[in-house]
Length: 257
Image (cartoon, rainbow, N blue to C red; front, side):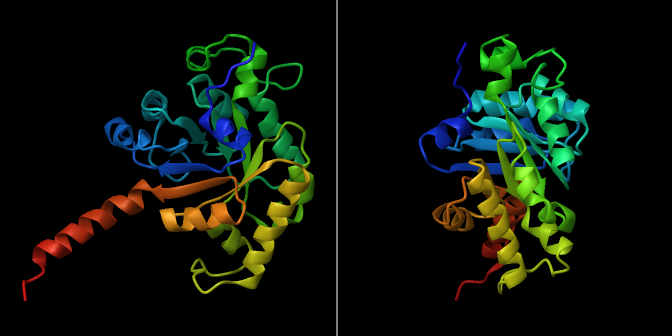
């Protein structure tokens, strides 16, 4: 059975980048207001956000209902965490801090049912989200994306990208900078960081998988898309919300000339 409900995969099949939003705040109403704004996906961040399991399930439901593809960055590369997110209806997982091909294969196996993988069959919500109980359809519709953020991961990027079943690599600039011994502020450009990003992108290109880069604004997302990245973030809730309020408070307190 063939299904096609994942907006990220739809974007890629149309040779265009997928634009998304990053959510760290456990609130379904807030994400409902955002997920319907012509986003291809919304990522619920359980690694650095403050989102617990119950909130994640509610947010995944809301994101899909609003029209975007719900994906989850799991806290760690533990198979049960990946399986639980997918069973809840996430259409993909982003797995942080992956360092080698074995760890990548572990993540991929958690997203695929036997004989291709080791995912336990129990699509409690996934079957209704995807519209099928067929294991092949369920597995094919979800994305397994890993993050290369460490010096070890960078050194093994060619092997990681060649892992069968992997859909893409997502680059977190901050952790990658720390792994390279660089400051977090990359505004002036750092050749070592640029070279690392290019190495990851080239490994993805050679293996015909997607490559994403984490942006924090629409402007950065547009620039990354123009550079050929296939999954780009337009903003993060915990950054945009206070920035918007700060602007209004400043306007309120400013004296008229």
